[in-house]
Image 1: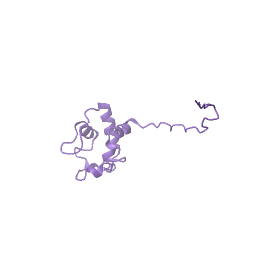
Image 2: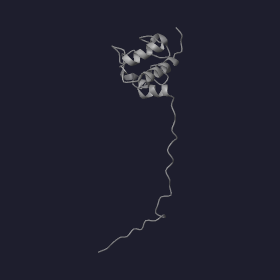
Image 3: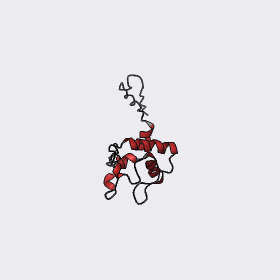
Image 4: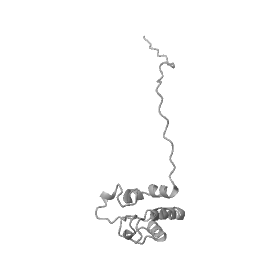
Length: 119
């Protein structure tokens, strides 16, 4: 019978060390709500209606948050909050009734800050 014996020591260990993980980034609460709830996928990072899923919604009218004239239920913070909470019937905008009032308010304010025209 033959036995092979392998000795483990520091010489056999890899001297390569893995790089440290990247530092955590902090995202403001309103922006986090926009990202976490998927708004960014349809409305885009700048709110211009050009998100990563827009091509899947060919005939949909996706509001450009930068243009107040594209809002279905109005562009006030209250109207935006209502659209978030209840959704918009007949559109791809579903209701986000699972969100807390402070989350909806923060998100509505974030969306309202994207507005660029004052029509």
